[in-house]
Image 1 (tube, rainbow, N blue to C red):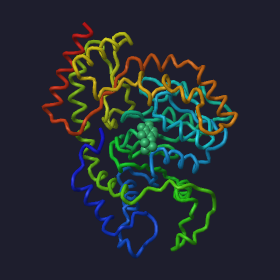
Image 2: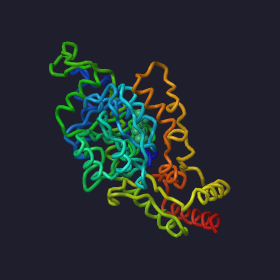
Image 3: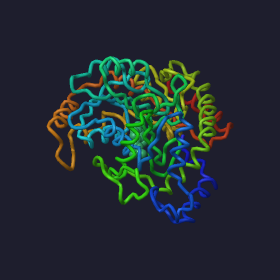
Image 4: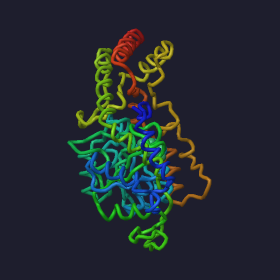
Length: 399
Ligand SMILES: *Cc1c(COP(=O)(O)O)cnc(C)c1O
């Protein structure tokens, strides 16, 4: 799963090239930087690797989501429909724009249920944000259709699915915009970083300026730039971009390892009576960073978890239902609107509503689901060993 597992001299070489010049900033200093432009180079590599027209690097995946929303004109009181199973960053970005997160049920794709999205649309809805969780994808055809019918923006949070595809197109490049995170535990990392991808030049130009205080970047002298609109500082540094540049060159290797290890593990788990797997709308596009599986009931899952803990094989297996970062059940800080600063009326009432909303459909899925993280450093022998142990422990626990 995480690219940091396969660090070597390639990362050091890229970072050292930046340290040689001492120019750690992505803009300006044209003479002293001696032709070293790691951020620009990484943006070009992202465009060619993922087949997107434009890429704007940011300081994080959260900043990428915020930037994308700003560039797409999503702001005060606009409702953004998103899944109840995600990472906290998705709603943090929405709230930071003054917009209103509307969390809805997931289905067995482990992301937005198209029916739940339809049911949540109001005159205030501006955007649908599928989150391609755990390496695989939402039902993008269905969601795109809904967005077309209702004239809504489709923003893909693809932070967890770098390298995944849907019908031949990279996840994150299919909606009006999409984002990746390059934080330390993602499929490829910059240490910290993120990117907004879009095929719309105007959206890109806005992202470019927004992430650098609104600088229009049109002249040779950044200090003399005009500011057509307000921005922030969501810049990536050259040091971080350098790490990413080494990592993107290894991405094909990461994906090949993930797919191989995932396939081997699945061949064992398939033999567990009653087990089923996450619905993947385009199986050939699964990035395979996780293998997500279900047992028939929450009780069976409880038994399985107890047995896995006892056998010492629980690490690396994520039971999101009981986890603080990823599922609505434990997000009391969100439901109670524990903010350091005042929220708008619309945000406050939406969060109050959320506290009283039932997510029984999602509960029924998440309480039976475990995602097994796929490591890049397992040997083939180790994966077979893990699979065999898994099978033995689960079979015994469920018999
Ligand atoms: C990691 C992640 C983000 C945010 O990324 P950071 O770079 O850590 O800010 C957003 N959404 C999802 C689904 C993520 O997993």
